[in-house]
Length: 260
Ligand SMILES: Nc1ncnc2c1ncn2[C@@H]1O[C@H](COP(=O)(O)OP(=O)(O)O)[C@@H](O)[C@H]1O
Ligand SMILES: [Mg+2]
Image (tube, rainbow, N blue to C red):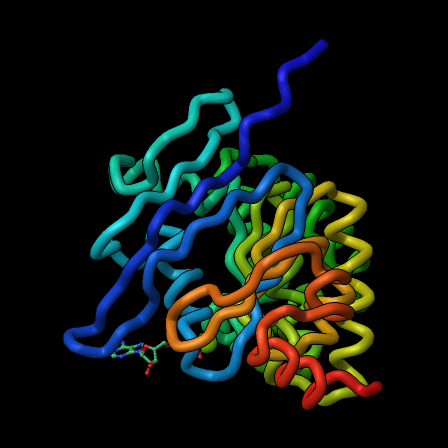
């Protein structure tokens, strides 16, 4: 019998202060390969802070983040060299920002935005890079004829889908998403959510999805953390937390946001 696989990422006691303002305090959890974890909570509850700490974008005041690399070795993120961390970001990790402009190069063509990630992992053959970019545009429902346009001429929904293609083209194992449907019209959100759900399941991705929208958590995640004032106040299987919330605050969130 195989030993159960080690977690992909382990967060232990993550704490961050911005001067005297608490960002988040003592957050711990594990995520396994192929699992989607939602982090929910109202604005200012520490969700984005947590995501920046997990991905090493910001140093921790206390705690530790460990990640199991492709070679099976688990490393403390803080102990990686800058080059190793950058390599992780280019290959094994994706980061989808709420504002697509933060995750795209707006002056570069759509094809270039996707191809650039491939080149960063060593692809050199122009025809194959362009072919992959076309495939990915199609996969995220962007007309491949628009491959040479820059995202400036794209709608908000298209930009977000392009950002997703750019992130997924290198077949990352873990994707961080910060309010991936946040800035979009409701009708566009639903379609994007469907697309994301299909991609995450087809690719067997692990993802940590920050959202204030419980419907997003319901649709995408198996487990969730509920944050309030920088701390995790409830966690568990998404269906359990949403259908049978234990904490008064979670009950309030659920009753005020989800339709009955
Ligand atoms: N760069 C910063 N400087 C000072 N305070 C910050 C900064 N970023 C976030 N905060 C504060 O930390 C807390 C958590 O913020 P954030 O992680 O952005 O929450 P969320 O993503 O859930 O809205 C809030 O009180 C916020 O005002
Ligand atoms: Mg945020």
